Length: 470
Ligand SMILES: Cc1cc2nc3c(=O)[nH]c(=O)nc-3n(C[C@H](O)[C@H](O)[C@H](O)COP(=O)(O)OP(=O)(O)OC[C@H]3O[C@@H](n4cnc5c(N)ncnc54)[C@H](O)[C@@H]3O)c2cc1C
Image (cartoon, rainbow, N blue to C red):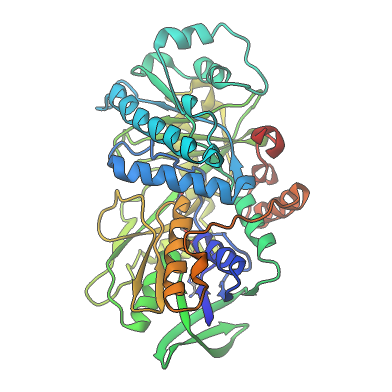
């Protein structure tokens, strides 16, 4: 059976890696010249602790899926914990966050008891730790280690840099790790180097035809058509176009968002730091994500930083493709106006420095990490979603968080088994890729970062993979 995947973001590339490892005949079309070069994903969301508004079912799903993601892409993971703080003026009770994180901690303990290989987020008993004001004051007296060796040492830099008087207590430290998107792109490209991938090729139409679909695509100004038996729509925020060509109605939201990159001194390692907030207001969550080499990725969930006043579009009864204002499509395709990028980055620096005062000296860099993401349905707070089908031969990848890719791949495999395109013995069996040479990932990830306009240092991990995973 000839399977086609349209879109080589994290969804399309991962399903291609997975299906090829099962022996399927896969062709992938990607309009860009590289894989996984769409919106960023810096946070694994292993438990959804950044989203107090989602229910425990979604949080547990994100935890399970993130564990699978780490097992599938261990070399793309930044293994540093995340500190979660609630500022005093935010209407959230940190004790309630602690209670909910404890549910995740118990669940992680159970998963590891059933399958020791699931222990990829550190020791289950340290999945979540709480710190009182007094404990953080005591940590301020200790020397800051260059490389933290345990959870207490990770909190020393937090205790010293953050304005502790602005927070409610306890502050939590959770084993929610980061993802390095440049390394993820490099890994996908290396794992797919022998695959049939048409880069720089845009699919422009699709029609039903006997036993499958006729796809029309454009490469170097020429048009071609080809028949495929099974079609996987992994076009990210542009998935609705394919639905429209095929006459399928599907409601979805698309949201344009951005994170920013600043440079600042870096004498030691920091945990990721989250200062909870109320999304979309001027008190939105602030997110501080450290990278090596003195670079930091910043989010501020306010309409003048990460979010945009007119940044959410909905599908309509006439079209499954939500239409964002044209200026955001232009920014996605051609880059941002420099002054807008610098202005918003400066705002992000100022916002984060409310909590980390020394950060006000940070310098903006000109290229944000940004893009549009799709959210199936009409609930903007949905975080765990994977795939939907039309008939037997059309799958739509609908991930909201990248950790959902293996649940998505599993559902597609099940469909292909039902069509007798894959062997039934593959049902429920997980195949993980073999580790790749670190030097190959490093050099490819650096080149991807530079081609995309980001500092090469951002393509590295803070802790070398072998140290981090030992
Ligand atoms: C600012 C921001 C921060 C985020 N942070 C996180 C995070 O910390 N953690 C997390 O898990 N998620 C995060 N996300 C969400 C995450 O980026 C998305 O869920 C993820 O990128 C979706 O992957 P995808 O493969 O479905 O889509 P995409 O990455 O958008 O991939 C779709 C691909 O399809 C290609 N394509 C589209 N149309 C065609 C066509 N006609 N022909 C050929 N190719 C085509 C595109 O070029 C693209 O490469 C963030 C999103 C944003 C915007």
